[in-house]
Length: 99
Image (cartoon, rainbow, N blue to C red; front, side, top):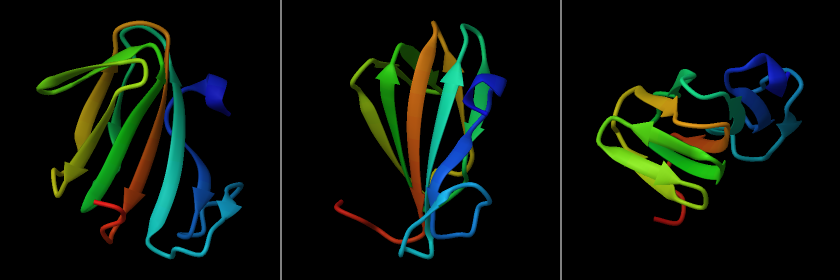
């Protein structure tokens, strides 16, 4: 599924089919493999954490390199664009965790 593009639910308390079930009903962890120029929109949630596991991506006002992360608070849907082959991990939650 990851090779098809887009976000894939890996772990979820929201009942996403195929995802590992977790005991946080308002949270989900997503992973995406992106090719240069690919773009996607991260979930619109009150708390979102974007981590770049490989490559480099752009958010509207920030460049993230491998190992970088961004925390988004009530930011609305955010577009992510890959500058090179990249893998990102996105954690979404309706409640604040480890702020």
